[in-house]
Image (tube, rainbow, N blue to C red; front, side, top):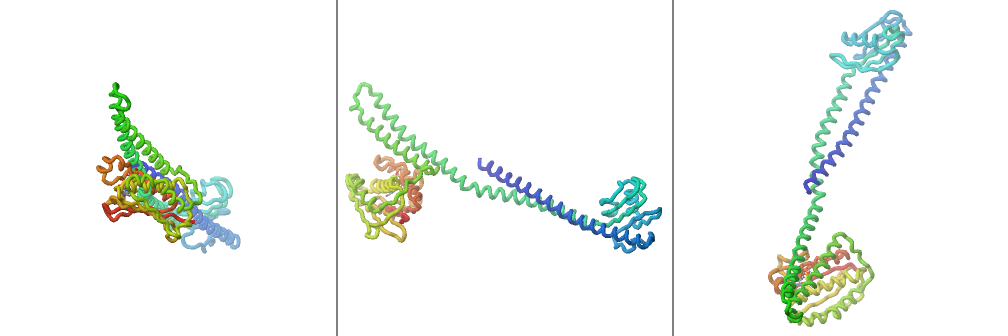
Length: 416
Ligand SMILES: Nc1ncnc2c1ncn2[C@@H]1O[C@H](COP(=O)(O)OP(=O)(O)OP(=O)(O)O)[C@@H](O)[C@H]1O
Ligand SMILES: [Mg+2]
């Protein structure tokens, strides 16, 4: 598909260049030609006037036009006498004009077997039998050959330009399409992963309900295990669908933030009330540390989204920290930003997995997480966290000294 689009863009740009080049070179050639011809015509006209003045003064037709410069020729006929000073092949061409051209004053181009001329003539009398003839011919083959050379240059420059612009078109189309292609690839992967993730809970729900429905003679209590399994999978499914929806909307930039001025310290303090109980039940200690200068930190942000961010980070810290561990939520000031950190003493992350934790559907060590029902996640939490932070023009990073040594997520948000 992208190959076709690339070819189409390249051909379109080529067509555009071709049209612009043809129009502009045609215009340039026409203007140059007109300027050159006008100069020759003005010179011929001046010479014709000088010839007429000389003849009027002297009345001697034989001596008229001796002053004409090299490369200009004269045919003057009046009162039955004439003078024709020109090479023989031009002579016959001038006679032909005199006998066939319309009466009046004109400029014409004349091509003989050996050269090219521009001719100015005045014919008076009857068409085909003029009684007064004045013709000045100038050899303009050098000007004509310059014009011909200009035409050749325009043609070959055009060919080279077309070849270059085709190559440039392909190259530029490829560059323009590269980010689109990778975004498209990511979307395909996202859809494939999402479908895969949706299939698992659906299959679990279906098989558990199949079992329960097969036990027609048993009560609901007897089938509680299967129903419970199906129920907890529906919860997982509903969270997954919610997360997918958030990310799909974030991709299409359809989620506007409800920005208000917020105190981060207040938000962090509320974490204790919201999350303290859950963490305690898991046998983990939750500690909140707010540095004195961070107490008054204010940011412009979306309260619900930032709350969601904190919950994603705390949920991970809890999931990946065994009982007896500790989670520390720290808030401090870092130049013009607020630094929010969620650190745990849990299983940590291997160095090779660190760059991938924000990737959609990434979960380290799948075999272990999938078996443990509580840990089993879909790998979308940190992608959503990253999107929320980026929407707030902040930065999020994950660090861990290694497996078994805990992990720390740091979020920097611009303050006001
Ligand atoms: N605090 C942490 N300690 C150790 N590993 C972590 C921590 N936070 C994230 N990870 C690793 O990063 C992966 C991605 O985290 P993320 O929150 O995106 O997905 P999840 O928690 O697996 O699933 P979800 O959040 O969608 O339910 C996790 O599966 C885990 O391997
Ligand atoms: Mg998570």
